[in-house]
Length: 84
Image (cartoon, rainbow, N blue to C red; front, side):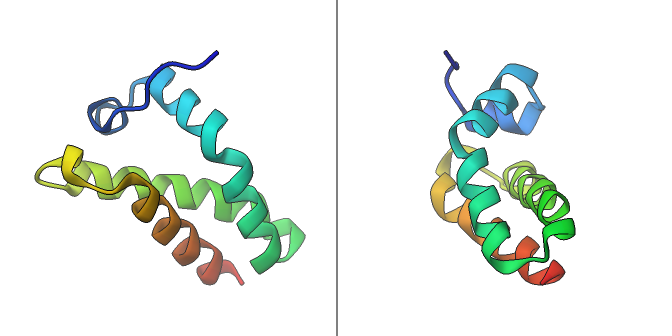
């Protein structure tokens, strides 16, 4: 079972929140990266996607106002494209 994923938890790097985020969205991020990248690049692109997502949350003046699904999708697309 995973706990709540909150903008503050992501911003602060709370390990439980980050684990919950990976548990909930990790397979979708990997699947996207598998379609866009060479096999050796998939884990790197997926890790980059989550790093980009966290950077967006950290940089946001009001992280709770972000659309997390849109932000993660955008981060995943950019990370996969950078390694395609």
